[in-house]
Amino acid sequence: MTPPAPRRRRAALALALAFAFAAAALSPVAEPSPAPAQADNPIIQTVYTADPAPLVHDGRVYLYTGHDEDGSTWFTMKEWRVWSSDDMVNWTDHGSPLNVDTFSWARQDAWAGQAVERDGRFYWYVPVVNDATGRMAIGVAVADSPTGPFRDAIGHPLVENGEIDPTVFIDTDGQAYLYWGNPNLWYVKLNADMTSYSGGVNRITLTTQGFGSRPGGTERPTLYEEGPWVYKRGSLYYMVFAAQCCSEFIGYSTAPGPTGPWTYRGTVMPTQGSSFTNHPGVIDFEGHSYFFYHNGALPGGGGFTRSVAVEEFTYNADGTIPLINMTTAGAPQVGVLDPYVRQEAETIAWANGVETERSSEGGMNVGWIENGDWIKVEGAAFGSGAGSFTARVASATSGGRIELRLGGPNGTLVGTCTVPGTGGWQNWTGVSCPVSGASGTRDLYLKFTGGSGYLFNADWWRFTAA
Ligand code: FUB
Picture 1 (cartoon, rainbow, N blue to C red):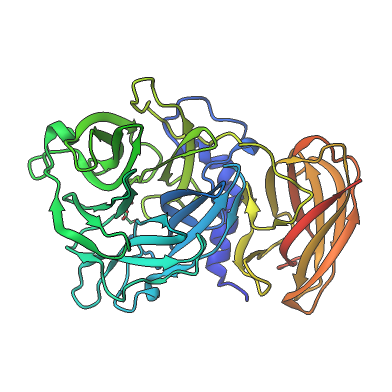
Picture 2: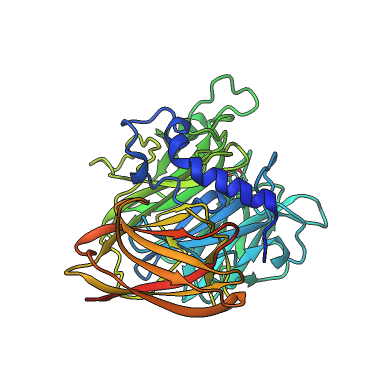
């Protein structure tokens, strides 16, 4: 239960300093940095994340990412992670339902993948080293839920040519395509089962007309580097990709069909943000368009300790993508959060000092809470007023307190719940306390206080109206 000390120190440092350093790390930015307490980017602060792959399903955005290990000096990645949100600012941690060991034939490198839904099943395509050949191969995992658990769908690589970064796209006629590649660009036409393909492996010819011209690019004449993301908008097909190396920027091409011919359209996101790689993911959600990427903006962050962020954008009238800059503000909230229904403690707009783990009661819980740590939950709609607060908590020590504050970690105190020792980090009990002064729509801060060491864990919470 007790995490290794270095991990804890990393998180505490990262999260305590994040506000102070995030603006400096994102250089340049289009607008002046927002006040630190308003920062929502990077959207995950409890671990380093990379290679975002968003998927809209049933009114939620599911975000599939890689996980850069703390202190990495290479792309040391053992597992993939899933997060979800219905408002683009409060993200629920679903843990890691897929890792290298899921594929019995794989050795290492849980690098950039993408998941898609078809006929109620979720297929997650990932690059990973094939132990038998030592080369990168593309595996496919399947699940009945967007949050898994995922299992190896076929027990062997779907396709292998030593290249990486699969993106999957299902066209409006039902034909699915899998594209991938670095340094080349490939695709196969997936069969309806999504776990096999027909017609062989096709190579997309990288022309400068299709993918831009790389300055000084003798070995690689075009800008295309890796990380393709293919989708369709109206009748236009888009391929957004990491361009040039290194550092990368994000460029894009368009085509009248899923296999081309591609025309290079320019830069989506310039080289920014303290990571020499970047990786695109583009979706529409609730009438808005979003661009996901990664950078090195958390303290301790860099090229191998990256973090996923998101920006809202609007397509130009002719369908071209505007230039998007990294910001610390992130995307605006879509709607509000309902504090009167059960909310997972691991639903977080910004975390300061805490981490997450699997809960014995299902899902995840927040843990490694120390005195002064806090969680921001953005845009909680209290309406005419909350009367009480309930939380599911556990403590192997003597507990502590949850201070309910509005507007900031030192904002207006509207209630304090005492958490007792429960005899174990997974021995769960309910605690309640009265609340007064919480009305309207406010940013809620759960501030944790108590003695020294780890205080308690939190699984979920809810308010009751006055
Ligand atoms: O995360 C490992 C690799 O870095 C990905 O596969 C690439 O797209 C780059 O982001």
